[in-house]
Image 1 (cartoon, rainbow, N blue to C red):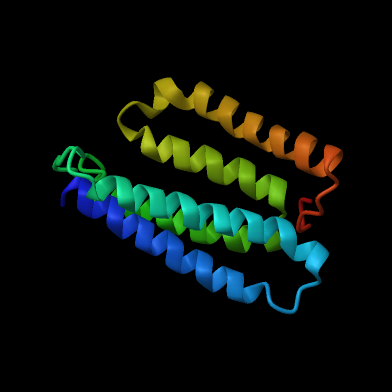
Image 2 (cartoon, rainbow, N blue to C red):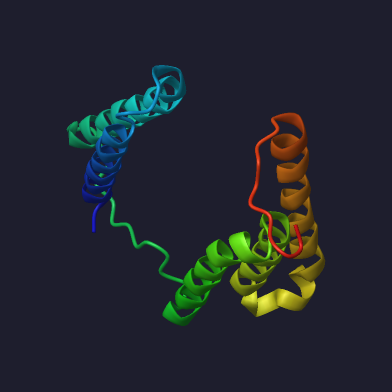
Length: 150
């Protein structure tokens, strides 16, 4: 698949999803819908610019192989981890699920040298969990789902 085709397909998908989500904002009070609508209109505009840029004659036509080096079994494992993450957020808790999922996904993606990357993966998982806790939970007061482990 060429870069041009991927860009146009991506722009169409993003625009379609954004339009569907804009329809979902109906019935929400105006004050609560302004920011999401702003973001969705921004996504539509950016995807339109991406499609227009792809149609320009100077745009390079390159062959793009998306995730060629990742085996399908690894893809399936990561997808299953994210499905379990969504379930775990509500049953185990957001922060515990985020830590374990980010640790397992990064370890799975570094499968060829996972022992050497384990310390970096633990640091990343801990860092992203602390980031969500400090910024979103403490600073912005965003309520997260609570489960058995908070």
